[in-house]
Length: 295
Ligand code: NAD
Image 1 (cartoon, rainbow, N blue to C red):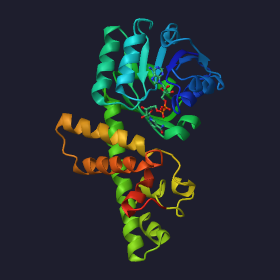
Image 2 (cartoon, helix red, strand yellow; image 1 turned 30 degrees about the vertical axis):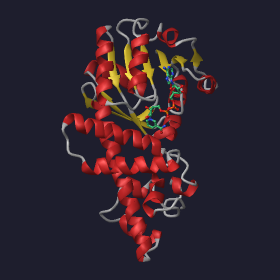
Image 3 (cartoon, protein in one colour; image 1 turned 120 degrees about the vertical axis):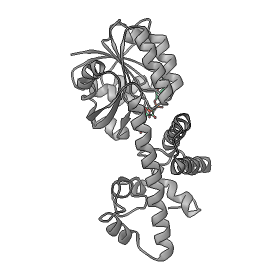
Image 4 (cartoon, rainbow, N blue to C red; image 1 turned 180 degrees about the vertical axis):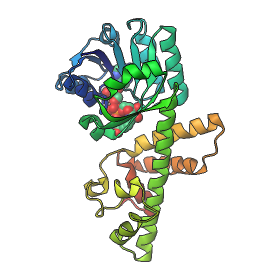
């Protein structure tokens, strides 16, 4: 049993903390929102009065927060209360620069740290089937891996500080671009009189095959479990895809990488969100491509 502090008990963090309890760890947690605290408490998570109180006895501290600014402010706040030598893990999706700043803050306090963003969404958080993409030193990874295994199925060490976030935004840039590509193909097929099922049967067994087609197919029918069959309820919300595409573009600009399709995808998801579909699954981008807000 390890003593773990968990800060940020939202849609992802709540069930992740619950899985740590299920695995037999002692979890002391904090969130600003009462609803998040109540939901986590129902999963057996111990709720502390503040973030500082939550981390005081912990050997491992995990944060799952909205963005880089939240992570940096929480880490700056808790570090004076964290046990020296504790391991800090941030699993939020944030920009690479903030992730590296967070690692530096931990090092100043003599703490080990990992950036460990996830893929797999709320379903993966609940089912403990997340994929963790991890950046940080080998000794920190060796310490963190068994804990991450209680919340996920695949734990990939991607290299040094910040490389977990780098892997996450590169992966999601592929995803955003591929969903637009698949959606465009269905829109063209509709205009050409080709049925959704016929295009799916061909492309899913041909060179057009990809996850956006075979798991998250953006039209109802061919993949019964895809959000398109459930009124495009997320799944993975378009607003979160836009966030990740913006992160990839900021990183591309800072690193001098040419990502014209990533830039186009960020622009299209920006319009999709401005249309009012930010809360819909990201596969609802097909509505924008059809030019009307109907399935
Ligand atoms: P969420 O908004 O549901 O939860 C965030 C929680 O952080 C909220 O409960 C909020 O009250 C809390 N919080 C904010 N500031 C805080 C502070 N200073 N101290 C304590 N608590 C604070 O978000 P989520 O869906 O759980 O996502 C969390 C992170 O995981 C994000 O970075 C997101 O991009 C990433 N992510 C989300 C998904 C998904 O499908 N939801 C998938 C992969 C990655």
